[in-house]
Image (cartoon, rainbow over all chains, first blue to last red; front, top):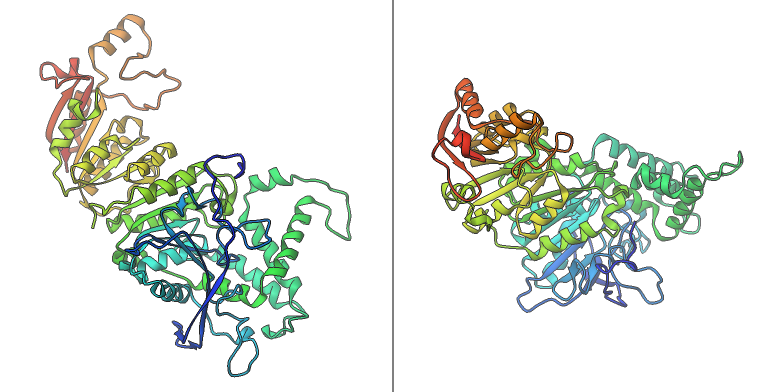
Amino acid sequence: MTTSESNEFFHGSVGIVHTQIISFDSFTLEGGETITPLEIAFETYGTLNEKKDNAILVCHALSGDAHAAGFHEGDKRPGWWDYYIGPGKAFDTNRYFIISSNVIGGCKGSSGPLSTNGKTGKPFQSTFPFVSIGDMVNAQEKLIRHFGIHKLFAVAGGSMGGMQALQWSVAYPDRLKNCIIMASSSEHSAQQIAFNEVGRQAILSDPNWNQGLYNQENRPSKGLALARMMGHITYLSDEMMREKFGRKPPKGNIQSTDFAVGSYLIYQGESFVDRFDANSYIYVTKALDHFSLGTGKELTKILAKVRCRFLVIAYTSDWLYPPYQSEEIVKSLEVNAVPVSFIELNNPAGHDSFLLPSEEQDSILRDFLSATDEGAFF
Amino acid sequence: MDLKNRPDISYIANLIKPGERVLDLGCGYGELMLILKNKGVRVQGIEKDDKCIIQCVKKSLYVHHGDIDDGLKHHLDHSFDFVILNQTIQQTLNPGDIIKECLRIGKQVIIVFPNFSHWQIRTSILLSGKTPVTDLMPFHWYDTPNLHYLSGKDFEDFCEFERIKVLHRAFFNRTRQIKLFPNLFATLALFVIRA
């Protein structure tokens, strides 16, 4: 594994950034319910040019947020995609205007279970309406329109972010030039739903759950931590775990964890509880599970309407979103004669590979964006 | 020599018209695809080496990271004007099946392969009694990507047996097209076939 410090291909930082919140009067969800007002938390990096044709929307994964690059005041760790966003980086802020927004249904500033219900003056919690990937994308579209951007230079994302990018290409075919989908899928398999279900059931079985109307002082933290532990197992590869933890140190302790990997997961679970809301975890994982553009012929039919170039990246070691799911998208695009490049990177880090530094990934993202042509295809 | 000026490459480029759709199987670093793209051909490739994919993306080419032995099933019948197998077929596991699949998805198929009956190869086997290592096939038996060795005549026989129509045949060495005794003097054989 390489680090940002030791590699010259990951240099600049966008520096100190602030999350902003924009408010729209109202927003109707795919399910028919209306959110009043709609709030979207977002960050931007770089400058929108006069023609407004250099904007890239980056979409975050399950537990991500609007903070994709740079540092918040006092933070030691940068945003979740800092390896790839910044001056001179693959998403070069000297050239592109990068927008990252928190999805609705999330808990990091956008409308979601933590938002206040105007009628009761209290947080919605589990009375917030069901949110879909389509809703997340429609909310992003409102934000893009607010900037006066008609056509995005690119939409990019990994995992759930990849689903949003794919949804963009179908919902707004004329509003994006490039679509980058990493470690993602056109729909969850039964196995992926199963993992999410275990996570949700852990939350639902927490004594503090109270049908999602839990007291903020006594939240279903244990359940949420368990859900996160479960998730974390699926984000890493067997190889990565073996390298990181091995079997050390087995002390034969019955009462508590006695393996390094156990302590690691407990730490990940506990630290997640401080920054994520249990209801949001349920809303967002449900959105993931319900998302479906189909597979095979069904997917091919839906993707017939897309009008942008695609880059699809999968990772050999990703067993949560195995490469065949990416290839499914690619094949359906190819049948529609859509310009698409597909690469399966042999990065050992598992599903989380898209977040981590890799020279190959850097070069392919950079070159795909710079080599943009109008294409002989359309 | 610049690839563009190589006789086999310019022969292929002359066959394909701007606007036509081409699938290049085993496209390598995308040199041929780039020449075709610059001509206005709608070209996409398949390649199994990730380093090659990265270079293709740099050239703004569209490539699928995959192995043609794993199948081309998703492509519809006659969805490409040309399918190209440029020095690929000898490296595949099931060349017969792949050629038939190419004939299904391509209106025409261009196949180029090293000619195993070139006189240097023939004499090398005859004199040394060993598997030949030549400029064209610079590998040893234990490290070669080539799984099959065939000559122009072998391919003719295959087409006759399978009732595949040969539209064009051309033979080359590094610098020019070979017309006299090509099976003996050509290092490369090129066939354009259709179902």
